[in-house]
Image (tube, rainbow, N blue to C red; front, side):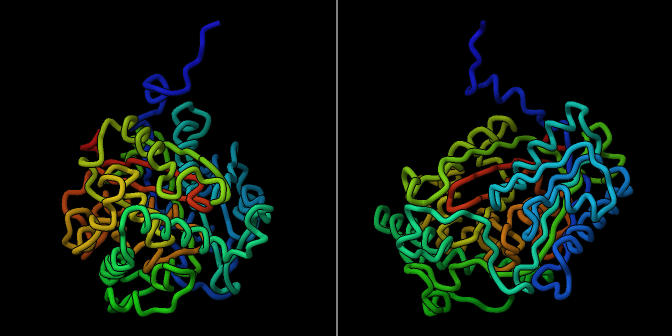
Length: 393
């Protein structure tokens, strides 16, 4: 029997580069949606995305979903919508789940297993009274009473600062850049002035992270619609084609993380770039999962936008802010736009909007390639998508 090689070009070649596309992308209830259940919000986001694509709800035959209040949301939302999909996926790897949903949807569509796939997320965590967690208590971490996930990210930030000489000012640069983008986005939940000094002077939550180093706690829903590329132009004037997608998980608890300064984005990014046939220097706009300011710095390094240990200096001076060298989190990110428990799908939606030229004041002129990266758990699961316009095929 021939040996199967699970790493290398053979695996890359199997990804259906440019064979599927996103033809609808919508949000609902960004910030606050009082009186709405997650199913209400998910349904309205899905209907908005389908309307963009000119598709009826009855056309959906694959549903990829994760909501904040239903561990079996593939079943619950199907019933709520009144549809009978051939396939449902309720993968719950945290904020990276939606990139993984898009990857599986692309494989299923290209194989002819389904024709119209909807990926959707909704959470009413702000209106419902706070954070939602479905993780089991860790026998290794729980005795120390961490404020998870915050304490885990603070631990990674502390180690990174010790190892590479990064400063709290470097972390603050990330929050300030995100707010500058949010100020150009009418949909953003947190707007207004924010300076480096404001971040440093804000309430310390878990050293070295202040409240401004931490993501928002909001309601929100998002949805995308995916079809095969041969019918994409029937449903969208400017489809966003999925050129590459890869995910990788290295651990669950931060206590099991091999190196607190290196994430699995090093591998998910490498594989996604190889599938797409591009590199970091080709990317026009970057959407990263910024639950905490340290995330952005780690992911910029691990995804190849700057060398390891240089992320703090790289983000200084407005490099990732409006007008900077590398547009990052152009909607304001989880730090200032919206963070409904899991941010990943909102990163995909912003990437699509940029490629379609729909972003108004924050639009990146001539954007043809976008990267959307998701993070789940405590730097545990990483997933990367490379999206492009028709010109990038």
